[in-house]
Length: 207
Image (cartoon, rainbow, N blue to C red):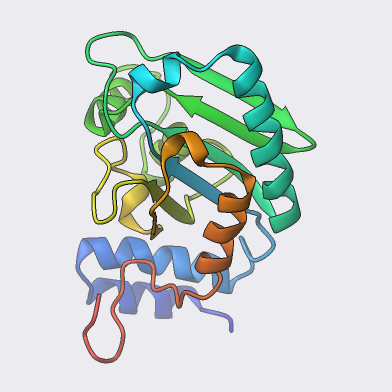
């Protein structure tokens, strides 16, 4: 399906702002701008204190396992945030690139602070739009497709503000220490069964 510019403008003008943003994502997908894009996954689990007890060797083994599963499932990136912790300590970041899959572990449990930090550091000569702010927050891989919450069913992670707007939410009843590549595959299989609406509602008014 192709959308003409006038049709998009007319439809957008009748929608609330949040749904207009969701519609723009649908239009980009319909035009093929993201149809072949790999899936972007964000995981929230554990605490900063628990993370810091894990050795570098264990982190490296974990990242290799997660990246291997992600590559098999067509995932472009896996980014991990804690459910809590960190406080006033400057967040550190671990990054790996394993066979083309980007794995990041970011010690930042305050999503509002993360957005504020990006805005405070915004280059004076760069216009801030939804797209440019989104790229600064989530990287060049594109919008987050699915957010998995580990070990805390029903809990909305405070580490995420931007990503939760349109991503699918998956709960996994597993302890953070046990989370591995098999769970990454389970997240994607669940995601692929979803009827994504990007902030819209279905015909019965359900969210």
